[in-house]
Length: 292
Image (cartoon, rainbow, N blue to C red):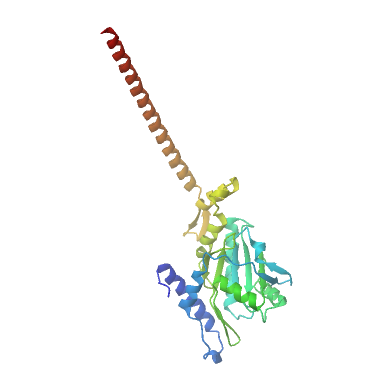
């Protein structure tokens, strides 16, 4: 069982609300079926963090093969849905459109991709996938929708730590958005169908701007600066770029360098004076010895 620290408790509360909202839509004849254990679903979801998701082959809305390897090299946001979901999945998708639009304004275009993936391969054909995207007005760049076969779907959802269970006319499921880093590793889970935008942008910021020191280039250095300077303004409810942070760090760094330089110069001067005095004393001793 998960020890409910404050962050986990908050996640559990969000997940509980998400699952409860979905289960309220379930058919009345579904009461005899086993529903999701919310605490266990959260434990499974959080345990996926740090896991590298396998390279699954899916079919997109155009009937073409789509592999997860195509997304490697940039962060990927994954949103599991099923197209016949009456309310929660459409609501989640529409909210994600707003979040992604905001993120693209903050981080710039082309910095991450989005994949809506169905966990209902029995019903969700490419035609239904395309209709779902059209109905939800998803027309943003770098956003695909796809579905795998039954075996692939089960393995894929397990890799994501996503819990779902068939119910009468649909599924009981958590409302979960998964953020992968550029290597395909699960970086963070975001819960709920109307999550605060900041909860989504902060971990996405980490994987968009986060770069390895081993691969530090001028481009990555700029990303590092933008990572430091992109801060959330609670007054406007938006992320903004605040370069005063870098100015402050730069001034502080220069002050430290200048202080260090002065200390070094003073130490070197004192050392030279002591050396000269020692040499003079030694010369004086030799002179006095010669006279005796």
